[in-house]
Length: 317
Image (cartoon, rainbow, N blue to C red; front, side, top):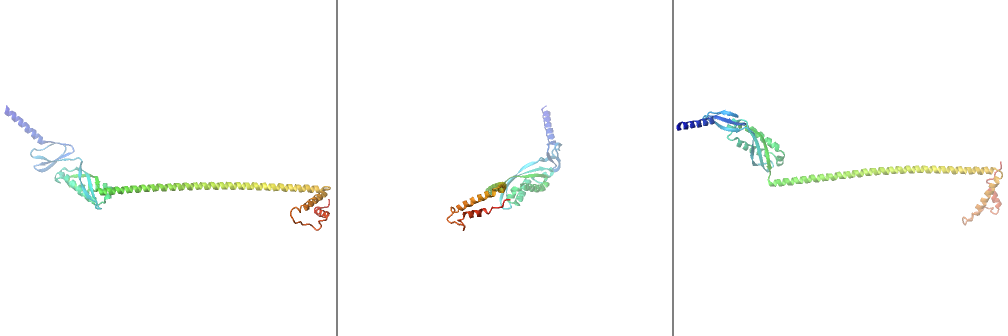
């Protein structure tokens, strides 16, 4: 009883081993390369697959998903002979499992080395300042060169990204000083522009104020001249009216005198008045100065009066 049991157990183990070596389950997004008798036979796709034990073997297992891989940091020399330490990461994907298995003994190492050499070549064509400005262009150049070479390895290079660009400490200090100087320059320019605009605004305000003052003064002068003109017109009108009134009064007085003279005894009254004034004026001559002018017939007072009254004597009508 023991030997059949042992045989059964051994047979069961052999069957299990045979099934385990015969039935293979390929995971999703994986590709297994099968060799038969040492030669490439086919690529097993995801799912349940059957292989012949001791005849077939799974030589390579490839992950078909996108793979990120760090590219070791390296020192590159720029066009202006400046050392620059560059650190990056590359993303690739296996698209042909057969070429990935037999196209290169180690496609990961090949991609890494090619990425480093291509990066040194691209950076060597640029100056230090341009390397910071054209990182996208560097990434595209590296991807283009890698993708072209990796086609024979069954690998598709999707993208390359520079993680860090580190110049020497001396260059960093110089760049920091340059940035500081540039910022101070922009600050001074902005301050001067502000002062300039302030002066422009002040000058404009003063000009507007001067214009308004001059306009106000001109308007005031116009108003004053208009007032003076109106006052002069009013004065002239008043003076003309006064002259007219005086002339009218004189005319009325003369008319009254003339009318009085025409009455009876009027001429005698006028002669008497004239004689009185003549004598009075003659008597005041000595009071006005030390020199006196006398007519030749000063002793004849009656003759003098007769001479004065003869001016206005007329025949009655």
